[in-house]
Image (tube, one colour):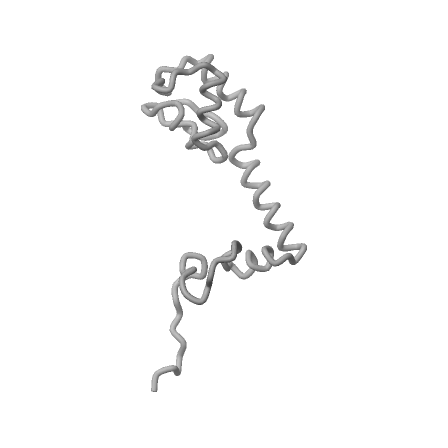
Length: 122
């Protein structure tokens, strides 16, 4: 089992798909990595040699922000918005949708389970 950027990569999947298990690498970035290292698209992780795994690891380390660093960066960006008390920061703090969605109805995923209002029945 290959371990890249602190993540165990599944061995029986194609390299392009397996790289997407790393937080911060999507399909496009995985395709770019395979293209730069001249891996065929149908190549599987268990077919990679140790030298090729090291090449992939070095490329990811040098060109991408992944896993813990990326999560920390995103968290710091959100914290900065909250400290500046921007509108988006206030929406994050209140745990409401931040991108302009309606909240009168819907938004249940973000707001949580609906709570009944007591004393409404008569």
